[in-house]
Length: 575
Image (cartoon, rainbow, N blue to C red; front, side, top):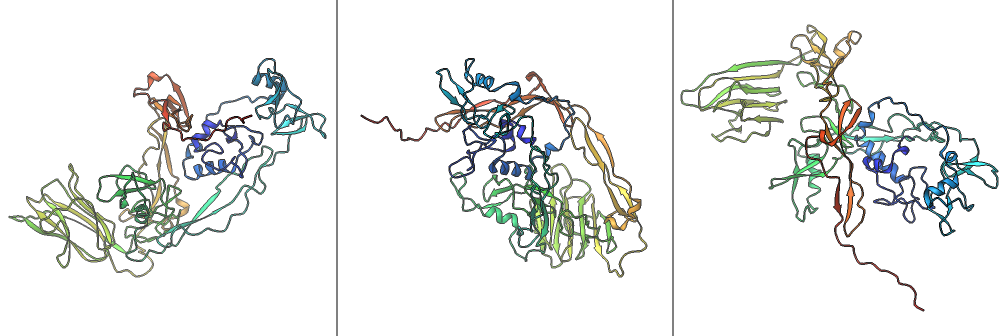
């Protein structure tokens, strides 16, 4: 109901095309054009949505791009007219608006469907536009009526308002993956009953998801995101064919399919969203659904609160491992490789780092002296290394000491080495190793609720929110465990505070481009450009353009400059 009061240009911001433009609605053999009709005809129904419009807005909201609508708007009293427009401007006045001061209504046809008016040449003409709501009308069965949504109903009456109700959930759909954790969905419709007569639409989720096929994929199975990039290998890109690999660098949306052209120094977005069930990041269980990253617990269940303990045991209490920490600063008189520490099989949360920048290098090898990183006096580029069943991240920033990190668990014993080229200023190491354990838990260890540090502010200006999440921790080492180890009755509330309350600096608001005025031979398209400043969480003010310091974006530009194709034109019949 609210959406139908938006103007078509504004609805374009929600990804909606006019009926018949880029879709089948309003075309021959398909549903008639409705509210988003590009042109009004006698068959147009401007009082309801077409299936195409419903699909556009549903896809927009399902993609997560409609979160800006969640903000509570400023409370501004607006006095809606108490009288229907057709009562203020009768049919004759409506004709004068369309055809000039001498026009009046032609008593022809059904006025609520098409308003016919007398033209300057004294002919009855119509723009195929229905008379305004509340215009007086008459039918064979209704002596005095008024127009309501294209129909003549008894004067002074309105159809009864019926609020919508949700129907039953559908059966669960097919899983998006055969292994590795996919999702299936179930939908419901607001049709029990459907809203009518201005009744409210249903509130709540229209679509729900659940995890499926969570078993790990077979060893050697191709990465799911890698498969999706490879699907574009046989599709030309700018006239050439490339082999595509996933791009995992910074500056891209985690749930967009960004692929790197193998052997070339560029990447591109091949699809706005990966297939549902694709991991958001390589080191996270969270998955993408409709282009948005959704939380997955350590039990591989969508939306689960299950957490790993310090030993990387899902739902554990942290009692199956012990922490090993140390500092190594020995040196060799003439340099070379030197052992730092042995990392046993099954180790987790491995952190190796220099205490200061140096010309020395951290190295990693197996018990059989096979080097995985920085062996044979050859220095590897910093990157991810798949070693011993886990991913090691070797980092060597230009302005910080180098480090080596892995989540584990490791599938073999490893040895950390240092390649010495100068005095060893020191290396810190920290990891947890498995210990033999019997029973269901360590009864000597206590657990307590703790507030985490304040989160980042949710907004950079005009008032955001910071939160302190409450988690359950072990008392001996302060590591986080699953909430069920703490007393639920003593759990404190989550803390919350306002932050960054100052107004935002002025900035340009740039609307979406309109449709091109012509399909060929050069047209123009335009967009709205305003200088605005955010003054509240859900309130903005428009300023003079001089307040925005950056260059003003263009409002109009040429489009569809290609020549129009030849077409047949029928001339008048000969004698």
